[in-house]
Amino acid sequence: MSSPEKSSELESLRAQVAELSRKLAERKRAEEALRESEARSRSIIETAFDAVIATNRDGQIIGWNPQAEAIFGYSAHEAIGRGLSETIIPARFRQAHAAGIARVFQAGENPGLKGRREFSALHREGHEFPVELAITLFHVDGQPVLSAFVRNITERKRAEQALRESERDNRQLFELSPLGLALCRLDGRLIDINEAFTRILGRSMAETVGLTYWEVTPEKYAAEEQAQLESLRATGRYGPYEKEYIHRDGHLVPVRLSGVMIERGGEQFIWSTVEDITECKHMEEALRVASEERERISQDLHDGILQSLFAVGLCLEAANRLMAPRDRKAAGLSFDQAVGQLNQVIQEVRGFISGLGSDQLQGKDWLTELRLMLKSLTKNSPMRVRHSIEGQAVQALSGEQASHLLYIVQEAVSNGLRHSGAQEARVSLKMLKRGVRLSIRDNGRGFNPASVKGSGQGLINMAARAQKIGGRFTVFSSHKTGTHVLCDLPREAFHDSR
Image 1 (cartoon, rainbow, N blue to C red):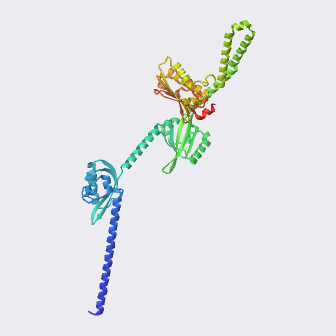
Image 2 (cartoon, one colour; image 1 turned 90 degrees about the horizontal axis):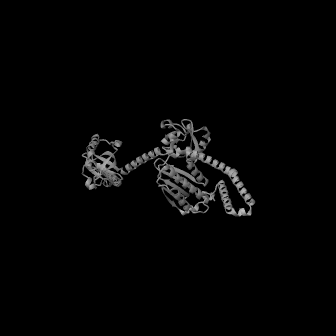
């Protein structure tokens, strides 16, 4: 072989060796990349939060990561080689599960989102729990492998159940609330209301939903409504404020409203509470009438009886001066007693006119007076009255406040004796953070305060006394539940009364 031929053959050999080396290097790099990819995949599978389970066509487990062990209780050594259905599927679902897996293998394609579902899984210890499953089909060395990603959704299901129960409870509270509740859009259109709200308007649910606030509100409130809407947009809440609604039969219903802005699905709504204050207005009117009547009586006493008593006193003094010394000495004791009693009556009338009157305790022991009064009231009655009086609360009261509270107790207990058939009652006077609270509770037959109205003079008198000393008077009662009378004196009332 000539030298040029040898040289050409050598060059060819070198090229072949170089190409072989290149291919070997590429193969080495590919193998290395494959090993790295497999290592990454194993790392992802080993550290995944979900259970990753692989099965072959026969349904045998060939892959089982640590999270699968944590979820199902089987170690990889125990699980691999077992049938998937017998291992993690409850017996009643196994046939359907096996049929579904067989269909995936027969189709030979990735099920995608169709392979995602929820079902009950079986723990090694025998209890069932909810899981979410997603499956995917791939091939290894030409053989199909089904990979399942399983997540324990027990906590999610509990949260969903708790949310459903909370929504159900909230709906029940919404429906049973004695206050009117309404959900509306910012344009005032009502989209959800409760029964109490329908009663305020005298309309059915179907008649009310879809209306706007403006359709049930007199025009005179338009400016105030606009101001409240601006407050809502600026602060996220409005009220409380008072207005009137138009009842279905045409009369106006006084109400007290307040509300907050909420957001749902990116849209803003208004939650409103609506309180029918008709009875409060009746009570205020009754108190006003009672106050006017009291002023009239005071004027009559001052201009009539008191002046007459003064005239009697002047006559007695004149008679005393005209009497002979011997007659004055004989009648002295009786005369002095008459003058003293007359002066006492004049003093009491003056006190009543000034609003303080002889009913002030003027430093007397309130608890002692209470005991004497209760003993006198229940002397010939089977009612038993217990009391719990805090000394600190008594000390906080002025003489006027103590007197009025004592009369409130007297009126409440007397009502229990005369009207309710109560066998027991409890009187308490306590010091609270915000002031003093007087409570009188009995176990009588109870009544409906709304039905009393003008005939309940005793309630009106108690409310008037509470108002006079800066207190808030409340009565809670219904049929067969007894009656609870409260009078709350805020701390600022102590300063105003002194």
